[in-house]
Length: 193
Image (cartoon, rainbow, N blue to C red; front, side, top):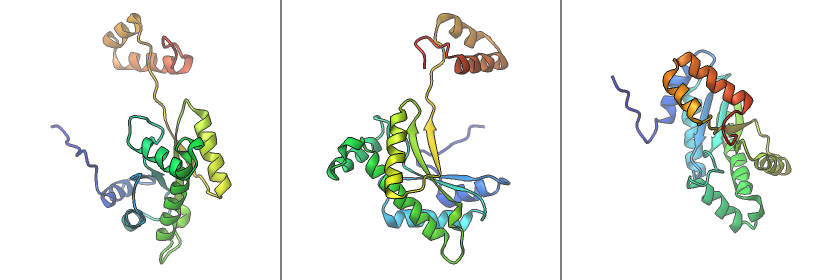
C-alpha cells in the first residue's frame, strides 16, 4: 500500500501530537520565512497546546536559507540589502528575524505556565561554508540572541567511478552501506565531496 504525503505538509498540531506520542521525542518546528508575528504566535500556540511539557522544541526559521534554488535565499538577501546589510549575504535579517521568532515562541510557551526554557533556537547553515556559520553566530552574539543549535544540510556525493557504480548496483544492502560509510569517512569520492 502506498503512503500519500501531501505536498503542503501536515498541520502543526498534528505533528506535535504524533511527535509527542513518541516517548522522550523532541520536536523540530520549521516556521515559514515570511511568517507574520500573528502566524508565528498561532504556530507556537498549536505546538504548545499539543506537545508534552518538558521536551525540547527546536524552532527553525525557514529552511536552507543559503540555498540559491529556494525562494527564501533571495528573500533574505533582498531584506539585507534594504536594511543596508548586504555584506552579510542574507544572514543579518535571517538571524534577526529568527531571534524574534524564538522569543515569540518563548512568550507563548510562558503564557499561564513557565515552559519557555523548552524553546531552542535553530539556525540553518551549509556544511561547506564555515564562514556562513561564523557570520550568523557573530550577528546573533552582537544582538544578544542565544542560538540553541545549528542545523546543517550535509549534502555529499558518493564515489561515482564505474567500479563504485557497479558495486552499488550489485552488492547487497549491508555491503552498500559499508561502501557508503567508507566513502564518507575516507573521502574516496572522485573529486571529493
